[in-house]
Image 1 (cartoon, one colour):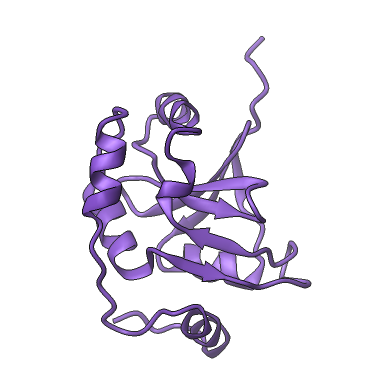
Image 2: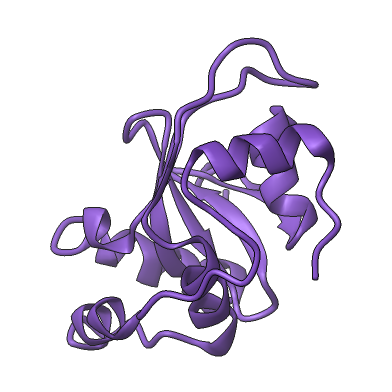
Length: 152
């Protein structure tokens, strides 16, 4: 069991999470497998516990603003698959879509090692679970992996 900071635990519980939560991920698996993005074990484990959560936070954070996020891969189905496939190839990781950050301004993905990413025209890491989810909730800036600038 994960030992969450009290503040993080409160936010997650207000968003519909509870210890031992486990939801069905088969719909997301089938949607994305059809587009060439297989659901790896880390994505399945994360989504079983945190899928369908809508985290309505805002205000100042530790090193960036706290921004609301939604964990629902279906938000990205039939619109952002190419972005996840391309970034997976670029950073040599298997990115599976998780949902959106800041009302769709950014997207969230998870790799096969349980590292959570901000995905846009650039990619940044919030770190490995469970720290990654804490970083999202507490407003910790992600580490830029690739700023999207084409190589010279």
